[in-house]
Length: 99
Image 1 (cartoon, rainbow, N blue to C red):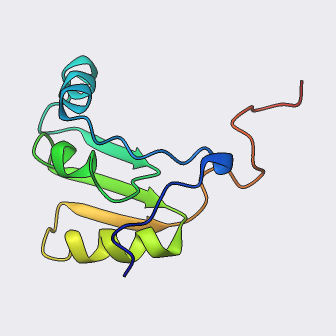
Image 2: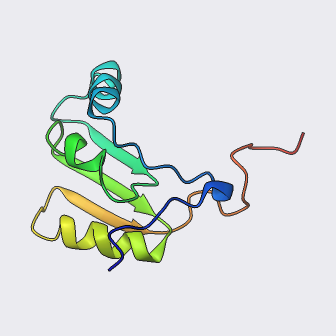
């Protein structure tokens, strides 16, 4: 397991570690305990650990194999978190159509 993995910037990978930013984002999202939340690009789980406190069903999607092992270890005992290994943007673009 690689704990000190650096983000791969050219893929758009970033690790949000600022607790104030994470708390503000969660407040703005107005998540309640009955919501199903999808964490796309869950990474090392910095946001995921906060999201799981707010809802009873969390789906964490990650494509990076080294980060998947971190997520699986971190949430192995949490039945509210489902970790999915897939690329949510298989064509390499967030745009639904070419420009």
